[in-house]
Length: 254
Image 1 (cartoon, rainbow, N blue to C red):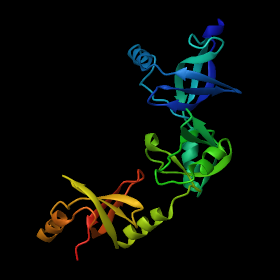
Image 2 (image 1 turned 60 degrees about the vertical axis):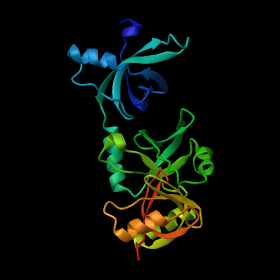
Image 3 (image 1 turned 30 degrees about the vertical axis):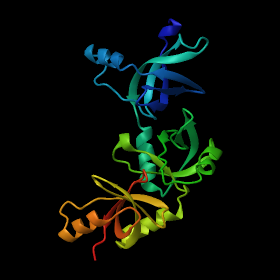
Image 4 (image 1 turned 90 degrees about the horizontal axis):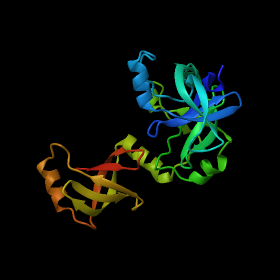
């Protein structure tokens, strides 16, 4: 058999959905591959595959090897064909059984963190909230070290991400969660306005938020809303607090 026609078996470790490239591991070797969707379209048209497959970590595949034209001396994988993925289901089953999972912290493209599950070797992207603090100690100083993590959910695989169990948040974050849970009002300082609402800070100016009118405001609410100026204070209730650090507020009417 021609060496270029030899078929290898392995599994996808990482895959970038936006850039359509990743890495496939076979034995002790790891190979770069680029997923040309046009090739899959042609394969489907010719009846070689049933449907176009979007690769993910844990996919078992067969592939061929060739010398890279862009990087002389390197070998890359090509002509990948998806076989199955039982590793992701094993990961999900373990996540549903255990309070936390073990994995190795990895970094990809110098700015994206992953965790490599110790049992299945599936790579799961890590979600880092904008609220988090001490990122250098929690993430960068622990690359390739063992960490504990949880999955955010196990129903939608495309949305599945990992969160470290020991990530750190500022005290203001927990105060906001307490206020939301209790439905308790807090003082806000008005810092500006636009046509959609008022900009404000809460917790002694440490957190920025935005006040908007309710869908059906009362005359009293509308009046107070229009009268508030920059530098004044108002009582507000925290409506939402997102992972991207966006805090939405509403006026607390007495």
